[in-house]
Image (cartoon, rainbow, N blue to C red; front, side, top):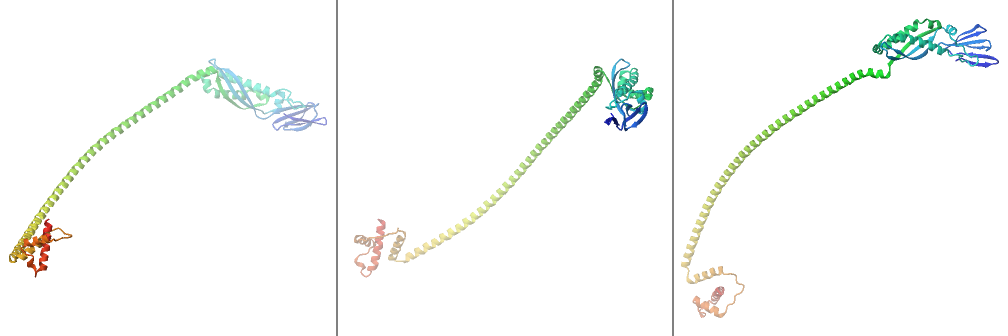
Length: 368
């Protein structure tokens, strides 16, 4: 939209870079071009603003196929006004001299023209195409047909329009028909999914079977090895028992031999000891016999007094120890009488008689 301002009874117009302005002053062309800016008198001016940029026109219409099925066509047409002067003479692009807005709706007129033209060619093509083919290849076919039809349309050329591009977004049937058409494909997809599921289950079962077989084989191998282990342990125990028995036999034989040698040594020692003891006893007996013989010989040569003295000495050796001894005249007299001595006969040998009396008293006392 052009920008118009007021100054001192005049008007100033400033157009956008993509707008073509035509200024007629009293029917004569005063200004004609894109992106102009000028002063004008509103009472004598006729202004037109034609956009020269690319425009997008979306369209949505219904079509019927050869098998009487309804399709919804969604497309977009890109166009541009290539001859603004020609377009301004065919369509009213006049703007208000005070506000700069269009007095009518020229773009709507162009949209209607393009939509009806494109729809005519699309309907003509779809009407001769079955539904399945239209859904499969209809987008490209409709796009080519609409592009060719708009390019050959003389009215668009006479209006100064040029179609830049045509895009067909979708060809869609009715919702119920679309669901019905989707059913076979969904069934096929479901069948493929079921087949994949069954195959996966079969593979899983096969893998489980393989795992079970491996486990069984492992158990069998383990049992076989346990059997071999038990047999080996039994053989080892048997060998250990045999070796222990042999060792016990060797130890028993060694112990018996040791005991035999010990008994023999003890016997030899006992014989030697017995011989030595016998020799000692014999020597001792001989020595005692010799001593007895010598003693007897000595006594045979001794007198009676010596024999009595020796007898008293032997008797004194065998008497117990006496702490004190009391001799009374009666005891001494009786002792001397037994010895055959008189108390008066010991005048010269008084000391000797006294000693004998003392010994006799000791003997009597010991007897008591």
